[in-house]
Length: 184
Image: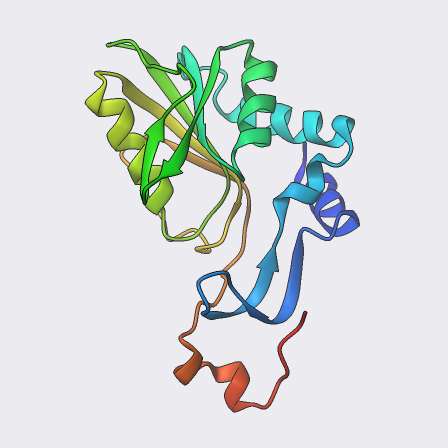
């Protein structure tokens, strides 16, 4: 998928909005990113999964791994496009963990997929799970890199789209200082 087609999809589905937003953490932001809207229509989700999969076709991955909730649909679509087994982790008592009988056999080459990344925390947590079970991370992919290209991982990283998203403490939010009301 070329960048024009991707940008059209992101715009048509309202994936990236600009304004003044409150994040789930309570911090403020100048962008709201909602990749889930791409998966309302199965054919769009399949296209996104295929586009991400193309970045990792030669990675030698043997399984695809993502984090609940946001990474489940893109992870599944990438696994489907690559015809690979798929598993996901969930947060339980504050820590990412494998449940539901999922496991990673020692030596398995694992591709990590997320919907969006900004700090890379969930990717690092998934990497720890893979390594603890004796697997190897061979790539990291996401739909939207909210760091504006500043992230790096111990494996090849590919994002379909990159944007710099502000992340501000309420007391030092420049949007609040400008009197811009919070979007709902």
